[in-house]
Length: 194
Image (cartoon, rainbow, N blue to C red; front, side, top):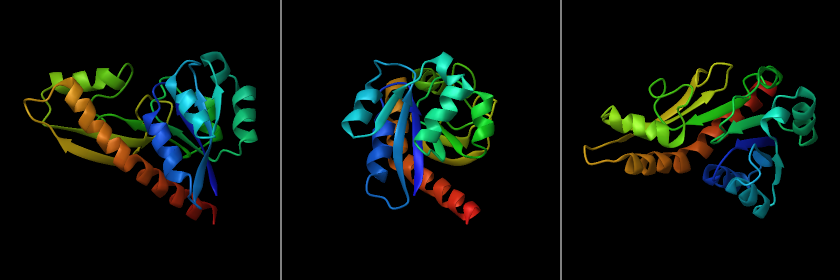
């Protein structure tokens, strides 16, 4: 059984989807949700689903003793970023080599990097008149959105799409495919440990 920590900063629909997906799995479970904002809806979603939610502001996130103890206490083996808006500190990346993944709401390397999150990404896709968009799951490195791509899923766009409809189309991909990608990453981790 692989224990997952989901890091999220906002509404938490992806987080809830992941928790529910693994709720009856023999493969993995979400044991911890880490959020940097006490009032974010993801905190209440996690608690309602019986998962510990830890409020970890930026200063605590950047403190090795605090973070490594928290993750160790919950026996975390995989960290999943699902709308987490802070950069993961280098010590955490080193402590969890090839065990931190992130979802990005565009087809990296397009529309990635600093400041490219949420509505900003969908606005950029719309302004660029891209004919498609999608989601990318990638390994987390010290470079923002720079880690190796694990999986991408695409959806066609039309000239009638708006940033809002682009966001909706992309979010549907996340709901459908993100838990499946996490399953594949876990299977790979288990093969490495065997």
